[in-house]
Image (cartoon, rainbow, N blue to C red; front, side, top):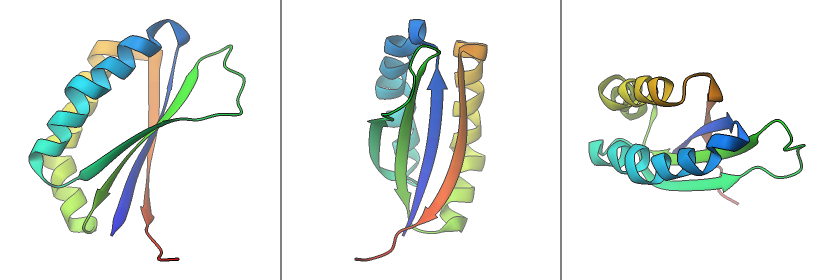
Length: 102
C-alpha cells in the first residue's frame, strides 16, 4: 500500500475557505474515482504561522499504477481547479510514501 501525501501551505486569510473546499469538493471528488481512499487531513504544527498555515492531505492507494491512473483521470483536474480558485494564496507539493508494517 502507498500513501499519497500533499502538503499545502495557504495564506491565513483563506485558510477556512481552503479547508471547506478540501472537505466539500476536493476530497469527495478524489474518492469518487476509486483510485485513492482513506483521506486524512492534518494541520502541521511547530511552524511560524505568521505567513500562513500548512496542512497535510493523505490518501492511500494500492500501487503506483493505480495512483498514476487516478492522477491522469482526476487529480490533474482537481489541481487545476485549486489553482484557479486560490491562485497564489495556496501552494502544495506531493510525495509518495510506502507503508511499512510495524
